[in-house]
Image (cartoon, rainbow, N blue to C red):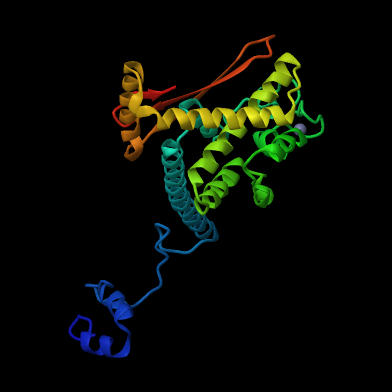
Length: 289
Ligand SMILES: [Zn+2]
């Protein structure tokens, strides 16, 4: 100290730049009091175990909030990418929303209804062995595997990803992109998933057992028909032209933030359980339901 001021030259000479700046920011007592230790997290300046504990808890909470904020942002970004990629696929809109519901756990499987409403049981009606989650129904159940066996697409290499549909879907998309005609692989895959779910509904609600080969063939047929319809678009009718224009408008939402709202309804004494998803863009316009 020189004349009630820090000796800047000496401080910069002895300490590194960062420490020196910290020291120079310490106010100097005008009353020329001697140095003393002060605990700044307590009004009295005296350290107590309680104030130390309180400070640590506050720091912990702050770190957790910051981490949650970061994770929330990256989650939203991942979802937006998934939605964008899904939206661009050459498949029907109802199939796009079906996949989106699978990704977001919005399909009314038995496990879903049981855990949300505590109604019925959660056991798969296909094998009667495991809980009927969306992953089990579409990827793990032996009835689903039977259908996949006849499918023209093969995702056996993703067996270890089937515990989470979103993870499986993301890996499948990545793998498909490495293949020639990757979009066709993905589109056919969606048709197979859709047919597996429909065959589950036929079994559950109408007691109809569909042969796995037939289910797989139907998926391939629907996929092929839609591809052909897309290729024939230049010769489409007026109605189809209007539809295409609507589609183009919808496709422009790629760069927009799309908010999806999920609603569920269950009627007492009735087995039916409904899940609805509506999509709203930035301008608050409903773009799909
Ligand atoms: Zn099963």
